[in-house]
Image 1 (cartoon, rainbow, N blue to C red):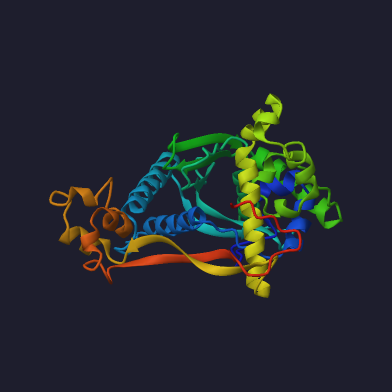
Image 2 (cartoon, rainbow, N blue to C red):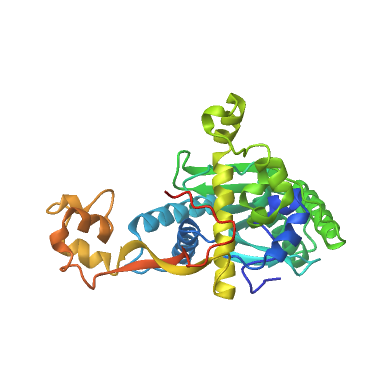
Length: 364
């Protein structure tokens, strides 16, 4: 069964989180809708749209980032290779599934290929991020998606036993240190058993199990800013009101080792304040202003034609630079470029004149 919405209470992107921490579901609901979508998330969403478009044989708009198009081409080429390898007879792109048991359990599969002759199922997840290398081995998100897919296929083809099928969990991550294609092979039975275990977690949560269990899965949880278990486990042992030279070496080591976790925690606090400002106009002496982000060309093809790389090498890196990067080098072109680019704006927190009673200004 298909679903209309892109998000489910029990979704694939948070599968690792709710599997390990039952209380995170309820805590996130209490937090309300906090828009934590970063520029990187938006970029990933756009890359998926371009990849889907090209996989369906369409041409993306000329304004699309050339690097994004190039990576989408490699994604499509890889899909075609897998289709040929398994002699695929069933192919789907960007397909949304919902559980047969629970309406709020679902997710979207980037690409699915099945061969009823070879008894092989391939699930591909397109990861556009260039930061953390994602492994397909025992990957919570892909196992969850694959389980939903097999559940749906089993209902459509009840005469087929999918338990003895070979199942390929594939990740295509075109950018980053370990860029490329990675796969892990398991069986339909393993995937089916894994989905049954996940359903038991869902049922426990629906029956009132709301334990907060801190761990590595906290990294992507939006409720960190208000989670007592996260604070007790990760922050309370680390943060002391002492100058760094007075801290024991082991505490300095632990603080530095967990710098990404602490930084992510502060980002979640910022998004929490932004969401409250958006809802109530202001929150804790903050209000939303408008910041300026990256600039982008309205029609990069026209710009490349007017300023070819062989005549204007400073305008290019691996591809055409952003308007701001070029104007920083050639300020005399600022007026000439007017009307040819746009600037992204984003909500920015600014302090209003009213400070909290115990406010401490450390900026001086």
